[in-house]
Amino acid sequence: MEHLAAPTLTFLADMELTVEGAYLPGQTHIGERRIIRVTGGKMCGNVNADVVPGGDDWITVREDGTIIQDVRILLNTEDNALIMMTYRGIRTGPKDVLQRLDNNEAVDPSEYYFRTAPVFETAALAYEWLNRRLFVSRGIRLPGKVNYSIYTVD
Image 1 (cartoon, rainbow, N blue to C red):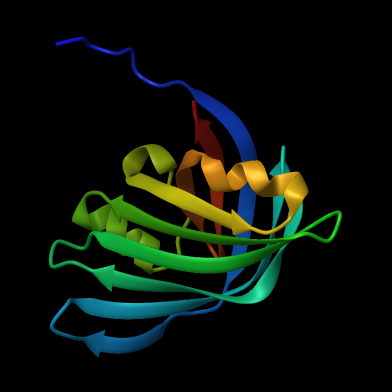
Image 2 (cartoon, helix red, strand yellow):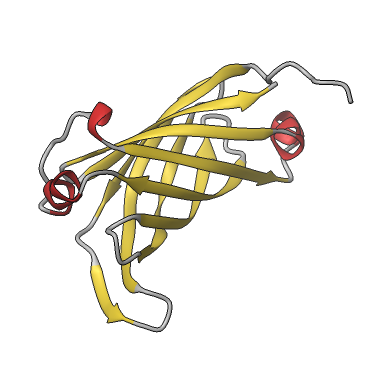
């Protein structure tokens, strides 16, 4: 069996999302649910865009405090193309660190694991290549916002 080299990553963009406080539907059969409204933001790099207010992060909190993200946002590029962006993600770490994040405290990203797998969809020809690539990101939770560095998997 042939062993292939690990894929490389190429920087795509940095993205900052501003968010509201969480809506708390509570504990369901799936887990504790939180819904966080995305109020805006910006993507800068090989794709430059504003984040259109109104996206959401539908979070499931597992029993150990691990957060599973399900995010849908809309990007409006500097040349007025619309790009739909969805991603699933995971944020986990020691319970005391997760509690500090829940308290909206700034926590060094080396203290927890926060990764996502963005998927882009667009009809804009200039950005059509986004429809045909895989992406990963590393995130950091900050008071009132979330920042990501997004990479193309080559």
